[in-house]
Length: 192
Image (cartoon, rainbow, N blue to C red):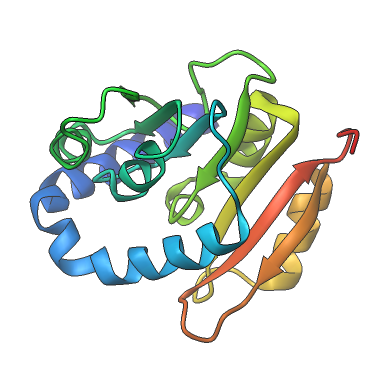
């Protein structure tokens, strides 16, 4: 029964994003761009890495990353958001967009170098499950960037979740300008 409940919650969220997709950038672009600026100041993208943006929305982050990278993948549950992402990323042939569920990612274990889950976890019925799925597809030395809305999550709870999911926080910041906490993590079994 928990799976059915989760699926119904996700469908509601997808419908909400389908309705707001065309106006999303007008409403949230500045806020999202501020997060991307802060994150990309500390997370460096290297040529040839496999990059994944889970909950890619209208494609603003993957457009920025895809201009300078080999393989960039965006996954979102909302078909309308993906349509907007396709427009945003027009002309960039190294970007793939997939309609998918963050709790059941259609990717092999340990294949992705950098994973971004920006403004995603507050929309997930079981964020810890989502983090475990993200960890599954991450290479051992990859960076996983997670943001958490301050109005929804307590930072002390986040630390426990990350620890339970076998993630080490390599960098974190709680910038007063951003509405989110930001954590850059590495799988605990990673060899440095």
